[in-house]
Picture 1: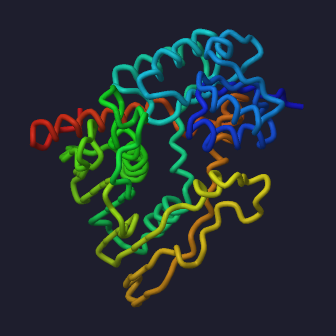
Picture 2: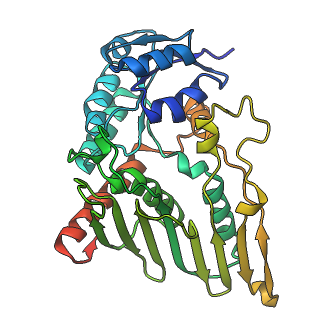
Length: 353
């Protein structure tokens, strides 16, 4: 029988509460041993949700606990580096909430340290297991669109008012929409197409009183492919999430993966038989001339499976599988963010390096 992986979560904001604790507390093989948060309201909520889990005020109680095998870091982005370093030095395996770090140099430091400590270090790029992305990947791999010419992905919201006391909207390292939502879009694109040759970006503030970027347009340049990524906070009526065009046809996918809303409502794969299944109205539209045949219709979405990220981490810790989301991959996402910010400042295209 395999040993249980005793896990501590540092930070119990939205990431810890919605995207990590529900899986660690329900997936076989994990035990949610401790949660640390300095906020009294978050501590009270954690105790109510997980009465068998010890809730503590400081991260040190988790880092110094010899019984903890895995540490999950769900704090503001500037704290990722020191906490991950401390966890690795303490001999823990580590999951860092995305974005990995504020700079690619910080990411390199952690990747080297993890190898030295012989510990698993990964980043929560869970959108690789979203239904929409999995469906897009299947369509691309099927060659139904032929040679892909254009790939567009958007992650839009309508939030015209600034959120009070939200660190992501303060002018601090790692804040803003490019680090937040951009990290997902960039990671997905790099998984599909590899690293770009060049990057062009327009990163800006749209909302009155805003202190950090809340909108971006990012082009990743490849020899025969145009990749366009966008996110913004002033989109009342969102368009398609994904738009793909190739020399045999097009694929249009609207709607968001259903797993986030399910998690916010208190559902998990353990108590939801249809977990990750999208309704028919969210199915993508395919228009193709595949093998000379004119085809138009909907494509059944792949099943979303955020839990598979954690299953893979468990298997990697036990030496049963290779880690899917590596620190080196997450580092590349941070490097693209750095270059996008440089491109926007200089108002010119920059080479990936």
